[in-house]
Image (cartoon, rainbow, N blue to C red; front, side):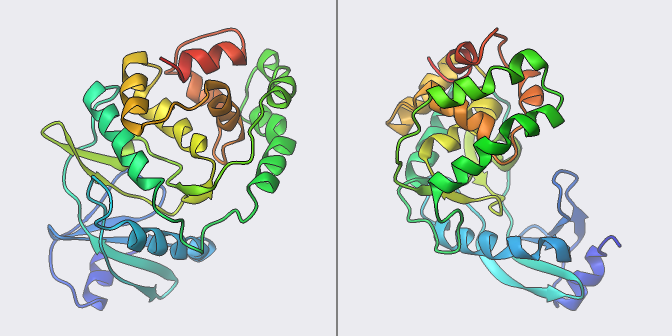
Length: 268
C-alpha cells in the first residue's frame, strides 16, 4: 500500500504542502520548503540505521551541504527519516567544474571515519564473494558472451591490495547531487553507504558524473588529490553491489576489451 504523505505529515504534527519526489526507489516527500520525509517499507527497515548514521556523521563536514537529521521512527509499517531539505537542480554532466567539485567532496568524505554501523566488516571477504558471483550477475544483466568470457581472467589479473577502508557513499552520481549557479548545493541518499576501498567510489562517479570525458575525469581526480588505478576501478565496476555493465555501456565510450574499457572510462 502506497503511503499517504499528507496523513503522515499530520501524524508528525508538521505543516506545509506535501509533494512527492518522482525520482528514487523509495517514497520521499517534500513537506513545505524546509523538510523532507523519506520512507522505508518493512523489508527495507534495516537500511535506516545506515542513512541515519552517515547523515549525522557528514552534516556540516563536507564542502557541499548534506541533509540535517530532524527525527526518525516508525509510523505504521513505514520507517521514516525526517531531514532538512536541500535546494537546487540535478547538475548537467559531464561538466569540468562540477567534476572538480565532486573530487573535492570525495576527498573530504574519505577523510571522515566510517560509522560503526557500516558494512562490510571484512572487505577482502566482500570482494571474494562478489568475484564468485560476478559472471552470473552480469549474465543476468544480459552482458554479451564475449564480455563474460573476459571477466575471470581480468579480475584475476588485478591486484586490489589491502586497502584502508574509507567511508563510501557508493552512488555519487548526478541524481544524488544538486547544483545552483554552477556550484554543488547538495549531496544526499546515504542508505547505500559502505566502508571499503576508495577506488570503489569512482565507479559511480566515473560512469554517472564524468561519463568517460577525460577532461572531466582529470578535473575530478586532480581535485581529489590521488589518481585511482584504472584497472582497479574497472574491477570494482564489475564487483559493485549494483553492477550492471550493459546499462553502463549505453552512455560510455566503446572498446573491445575490459582493459581498454578501464583506460577509456577511468583515465585522463
